[in-house]
Image 1 (cartoon, rainbow, N blue to C red):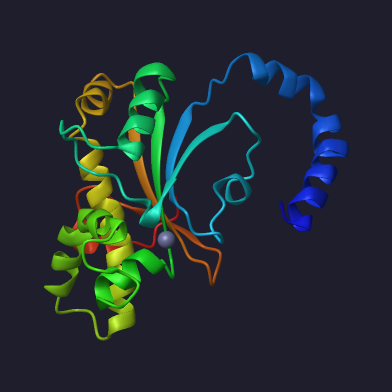
Image 2 (image 1 turned 120 degrees about the horizontal axis):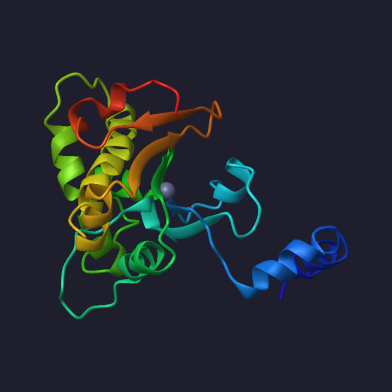
Length: 212
Ligand SMILES: [Zn+2]
């Protein structure tokens, strides 16, 4: 393990852990987060720091480009869907947040068809979840350049992930019962601003500027 991690763990063990020992020991018995969050693997987007929450408060599911796949029953390895299923049916979270972000490498690679994504690679297959978002953004006439299109796709992909969440029967049921709500938002790495992204108005997702 890298020295950086060893020293960091030492600081945690002697600092945060000692200060919060009682709560962490209590948490060891049971987790009961009320929020699940789908966020990107991107090292610059850390939900725990971004929302200033402690261990046990949010159930974080990280994947490339914070995508939610549509519900399906094929017997493949569905890490994100499995984690969502656990969060909804076992932990019974009250809210699922899909957190998009600026400068997303996965979305950029999808939009630019660049070398980051090799055909038939795991990333290629995974990023196809966002293909409808790409198609929608490319059809828009109000976006002037490639950077605006990438920015719009980052947000529109969040909209599609919110739609895809509703294809999972256990999500749909709890939303319809009023026990679960779905939220989309987008973090701008440059300004630190957080904006909301609607589930249904994907066409206008890039123009949303209302605060969450
Ligand atoms: Zn990303």
